[in-house]
Length: 227
Figure 1 (cartoon, rainbow, N blue to C red):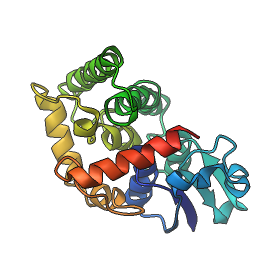
Figure 2 (spheres, rainbow, N blue to C red):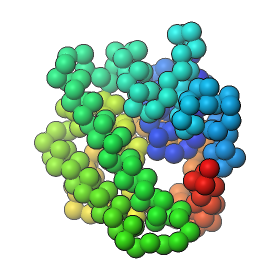
Figure 3 (tube, helix red, strand yellow):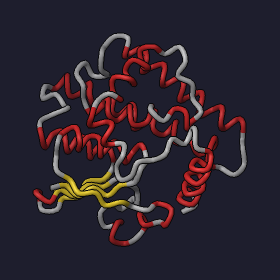
């Protein structure tokens, strides 16, 4: 059994979608970011960086794993799925996983901060992060014009990138004229594990159509940014 400490964010979904796809039994422990639960001593004992998600593998002497990429690799290697065993195949997955962790996630995250959460609107900052996110989308689109999935076969690399890319409207980034990425987005959305995983720990309302829900989400995000 895996204990999953998480919240409804792209990084949280990376862990829950992976668990669903691997069909591993897990117990969800919601973490209220707006109340700074992730900074409490008990949580810091699991993740010294005070961020979600974290997993605890009860079958491995309560081994705790933090950082989403590390969680996904650990689970894939634990099950022998979603990660090739040969060196080149594994490297290809790791490259696209690192692409998300080192580029796409941070850029979209900063786009969210300045476009949605920061009280003062700074056009230069908004443009910087939205434009860089769009550039990274174009990288994905070119790759997905060469291959059905990012690393040839479906893998944790697809899950990691999808959990962020699917929120492009919230980041204010266009996906126009990116047919390969749009095809991939549609294919990912049809996967039962993806649909179920993004409802963990709760199903978020469609905030692009629900102004009140979007306002409340942004206010909670501002609280966590100030911690």
